[in-house]
Amino acid sequence: CYMSAVVKDGYELHIMDQVTGSARRVEDERRLIRARATAAQSVGSSHSQDGSSRFVYVLSFFSALGGFLFGYDTGVVSGAMLLLKKEMNLSAFWQELLVSSTVGAAALSALAGGYLNGLYGRRKCIMLASFIFTVGGIILSVAPNKAVLLFGRLIVGLGIGVASMTVPVYIAEVSPPQLRGQLVTINTLFITGGQFIASVVDGAFSYMEHNGWRYMLGLSVVPAVLQFLGFFFFLPESPRWLLQKGDTQQAREVLTQIRATESVNEEYDSIKSIIEEEEKEAGGGPVLCRILACAPARRALIVGCGLQMFQQLSGINTVMYYSATILQMAGVRDDKTAIWLSAATAFTNFLFTLVGVWLVERVGRRKLTLGSIVGTGVSLSVLAVGFLLSAQTSPPVTFQPSDPTSPNSTCTHYGFCEQCMLDPNCGFCYYENGSTISGSSCEPVDPANTEQAASGRCSNGTQEDPSALWAYNYCPTSYSWVVLLGLILYLAFFAPGMGPMPWTVNSEIYPLWARSTGNACSAGVNWIFNVLVSLTFLHVAEYLTYYGAFFLYTGLAVLGFLFVLGCLPETKGLMLEDIETLFSRRLCTCGALGGEHAHYIRPHLDLGKLHYGTLEPEEGIAYISLQ
Ligand SMILES: O[C@H]1[C@H](O)[C@@H](O)[C@H](O)[C@@H](O)[C@H]1O
Image (tube, rainbow, N blue to C red; front, side, top):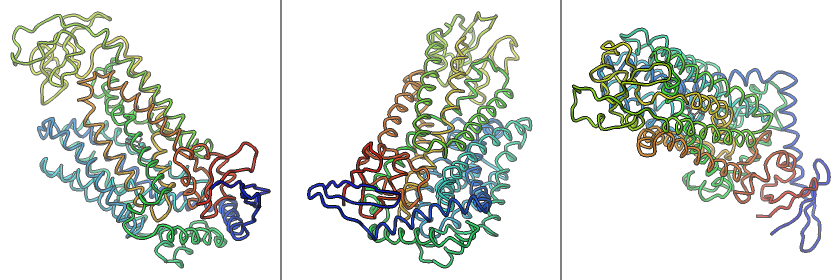
């Protein structure tokens, strides 16, 4: 039933029944609104006056070490693998296993983390994750064989999963509303920072051919121990979780400590009353069933999981992983230089995440995500066009080696470099004179070292014939600059929005009773799609070619854009307890109600059972529906 609500002034609400034309004043709700608005203001002013944010920053720093470890442990493996595959003689299958096992374990433990979070709280879960990271790091650094390595990588994955879903929730729950977006986004800054440091460590230890990988994998113990000690000695549990568990005394103390002010009564009362209200509405039974049965929470879950899914479907990890090859395409021949340039890619990702931290409270989550996904889509299409141009001008095979070691190899059947490079067993061997390519052949790759051919001119690191060049996974092209441009644009657009916003938004959109489970599900979705995209990329490229794969990602980014446009409301500046109502109307009207309007009208209409529909252009008039 539609009613119109006329907001007379800052805090007054009249509800008019459109059928009878009678107006009602809602005294009780008005009191609640006032209390909440004052609470929000007092949080803001106490923060700015007495610098209470300092402690919140310390809290966020120690929690975000979880993000750092997530980034470090996912990033470090590529450099470690270069050494490991030689030292432990790893097959392609084992290499893949060591990379994907961690991500797979992360998916499972992120899902389990929801349960643990609800039961034991955020603090214990973060400590558990840092403990797991420590154990995993130690196992990896002393691993005597590949089986133990696999075990260590699985353990580390368990830590990543729990950390990835707990840390954003913890930071969101301890932050004052006006800093929340920035602080949670700092966690993603730490993820990309961890990836960058990992690539630097990879570069530094790549010169240490023996056991260099032990340092690469083992160094993660340092931040893990630091985080554990920080939480063990002085970091508190989330006041919201404490309140939910009925530990009101402790909750008040923690809130006082975090805000560094005694006047937390309003905020405390407001959080408490809403949590009680929410608990009543939520009913009983397993949390996931309750989420699915409760429309606003269900919509939040769809938005949260959708964002995480589209983050991964935009291909970030493929682009990062593939960046070394893109750089090789652009003419970087030397292996070590390619490793250092990959560090530059990781640094760019980090740098632009910093832009996201700066923008999130200025432009809001919705605009930032929309802008980012548009730019990501455009950059993906630039990458696709670059690959297309390079495929169309792909050099032909002009030379057949007289004595190939594998005479049955399919490599010798290909007529162009493009076909040759799409076959993971083959590489392209050629001479280059300016932009002219000559003496080119497609030859079997050395399975133990893809940087050389199994035999002939391009084997033994081209020592057989120093002027011969070997291209594995790419083709020489004069359009490499288009691909390079695509790569830089991609990182510049993805990193401030699509990188961090899915984590940030997920930490805020669920009501408290659904928060752990909601974040567990959405983080699980993130990891599942992470594995899916990385495991399928090479196959997709084989079927659709590289440009086909990147056009496919472009299409997915367009779908992602439509999803965000229709479904993501603005959560900037609102108290966590107020956000649930943004999901109380049909999924696709959420967007229309986001932004400043929601911010303005939200305190007036947050009446428990009142949910608003469309907002008319005249200021202060909203059409709302009564549930
Ligand atoms: O938000 C992060 C970040 O963008 C990382 O760079 C990426 O590797 C992760 O998959 C993603 O979840």
